[in-house]
Length: 343
Image (cartoon, rainbow, N blue to C red; front, top):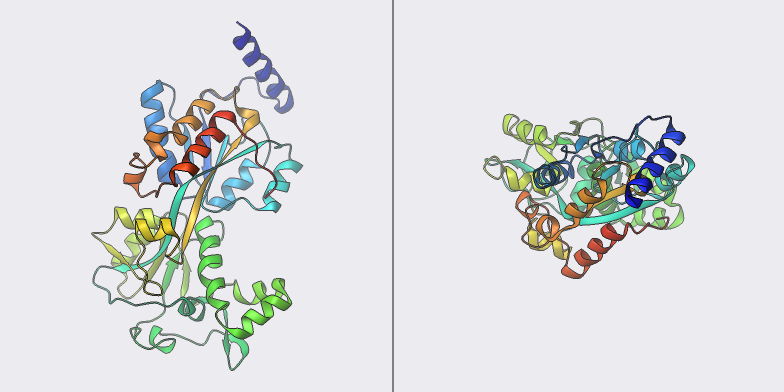
């Protein structure tokens, strides 16, 4: 009875704050297209185990999902934001400004960003500096930033094929795009002394010069990474940028390129030796726990050994598990709804 009264009281408070008449009877998660298949799989298992409605899962991109999540508290806003990068301080502040004060951050595992082509393409043997020279809107020539003049891969590095630079990748709302710019393009730019000196002198100017991607050669291809895979099979000579999990699902259609001699594998991504390795996150709105039906149980399922533990069902979908100690810590965060500090 006390538990029921507590739930009713929580629903009344939330309803008064938002104008809602009743709490949703399903969990709502939105965000990263890379995390989308993992959350969808957890949703299916959660529904089958509990008999509750399957959670609603939307692929809006990390930025889009966090923006919606941070919009406020109540039925009109997601309970969960899926993210293929960590929430920024600015996003955290936006949440707080809209009354989203208690956020639970769960790292669920690792993923890598791959640069892939169709199975019949040559092996590019990419080096990190190639990414900036091929894809930056402004590149260095003679110590000066100039609009990118390169049209073919063999113009930027010996041994690269004489193919046109044409890369399909995620849009600006995507966490994969953010991570690729940080781990790939920016890290590539920092290999050049002039860009490195600019970063030390003025980081904002450095980002203005190195972060924009070229208009000719880079093609925004939406939030559906599977669509990029399909494009590669229909566009010989092109490359695509997407998450490792999609590579795992489509090895019969595409292959990944090595970077600095390191292939993207479960081992190299977990170790961090593959240059484009990253962490996957789920953010939970604590104010919705006990109000949205099944939210706590869904989060517990996500953090369970069966889902994100080593050998769990998400590993077969391409998620690379956390080390055992980190996984146990995340289980504690999930069960205790431990609130994160400002990033």
